[in-house]
Amino acid sequence: MPDRTASVADGAQALVAALDIGGTKIAGGLVDSAGRLLHQVQQPTPAREDAGTVLAAVRRVLDELAAHPLWERAGSLGIGSAGPVDTAAGTVSPVNIPAWRGFPLLAEAGAHPAVRGLPVVLGGDAVAMAAAEHRYGAARPYADALCLVVSTGVGAGLVLGGSVHHGRTGNAGHLGHITVDLDGDPCPCGSRGCLEGLASGTAIAARAARDGWRPEGRDASASAVAEAARRGDPVALAAFDRAAQALAAGIAATATLVEIDAAVIGGGVARAGDVLFAPLRRHLRTYAALPFAADVAVLPARLGTDAGLVGAAALAMTESQEQHRS
Image (cartoon, rainbow, N blue to C red; front, side, top):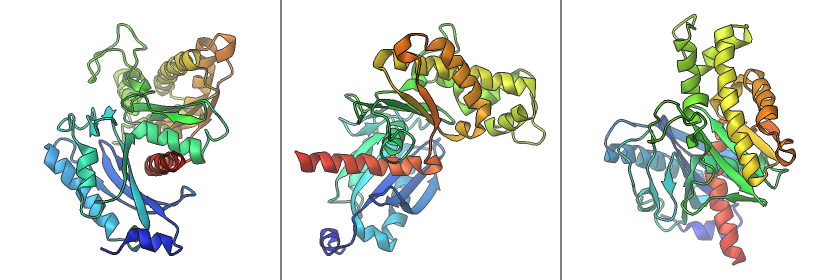
C-alpha cells in the first residue's frame, strides 16, 4: 500500500477515517478537518449473532472504506461505539450487542490490514456526538454543555471547561442509565427506572401502544407517535410528555451537579420538534429550580445523522492535537 504520510506531506489535506457502531448499523466514513463527511458506507449490525459475525461486519465496512480513492489521505481512525465502553482497556460492551462483552474493538480494528500503522482512537457514541456538536454544531458557543442522543436508546456526553469530558473509562455523561423512577421497570443494564426506559424512542412507542394508541398503518415507531401527536392525539401527546419529563429531570440533575449552560438534543426522537421540545422546556423550568441551573438553553443538534461519524473523527482529531501540543 502507498505511503499515506508521504501523500499528505505532498500537500493533500489529511482526512480522518471514522466508524460509528450501533445496534442497528455499522457506518464508516472519511471526514475532513472542517467536519465534512466526504464518503460514507454502512452495513447492518448482526446484533444477535456471535462476536465474530459482528466483527466481520466491521471489517467489511473498513474494506469498503479502504477501497475508496480518498482512503490514501486518512491519517487516523476514530471509532464511536455504543456502550458502555472502556477506553483505557480498548474494549466495548454494547447493551444492544450481547455477544460483545469486553470485546477488544480497539485492537481488532487496529489489526485490519488497511488500518495497521494508523493511530486508532475509541470513544462512546454519545461522547462522539458531543465532540461533533462542540466542534462543529450547536454546542460550539458553550464551554459547558450536555449533548444527548435520544433514539432507540438514550446516550449523552459532557463538554466541561471547553473540552469533551470522557471520564476514566470514557463513559462520563452516560445519562440514559441514571434512575429517574425509583420504582420503575427493570432495565437491561441491571438497574431499574432508567431514563432510557422512559425517554427513548422505543419507550415512547411502547407507552403509547400500552395506553391505547394504534398506528394508522404498520408503523408503530416513535416517529409515527410524533405524527399522531402533531394531529392532537391525546395518547401520543401524553407519551411524549412523559419522555420529556424524564429528560428534563436528567438535564436538571446534570445542571445542578456540574453547572452546564446548554443541553443539545439529537437522535431520531429529536426530529419530533416541538412535540418533544415544548414539554421538555416546560418540565425543565420545574426541575431546574435553583438559580444557577435555571437558565440552561435547550437546543436541537445540528449535525443530524452525520454526528456519529463526524464525532468519531473529531475524537481522533482532538487526540492528535493534544499529542502534538505535548
